[in-house]
Length: 87
Image (cartoon, rainbow, N blue to C red; front, top):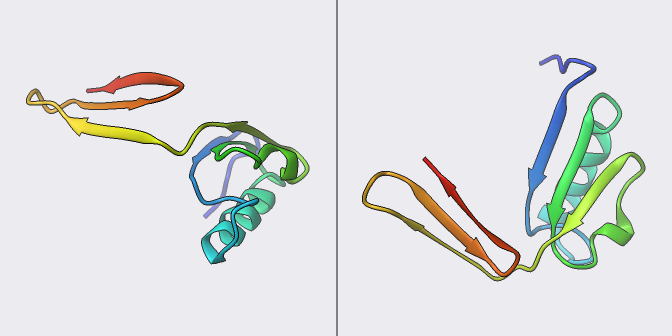
């Protein structure tokens, strides 16, 4: 798989350091490697921005969130930082 040099990647995960575990390390290394060939931004848990790999922009969001599927086939997601509706 080839990634174009002007590609942008957004990774949204709750599994990043400072949390500890295999998925946290995998996501971190994946972002670090992808940042070598594309613009990478991450939305992750509190504390993760301080440990960001070089070239990766991290925005922090609280872990608490809820999601429901509306009768119209839309997905409605809400967290303590905002709301979004996807159709």
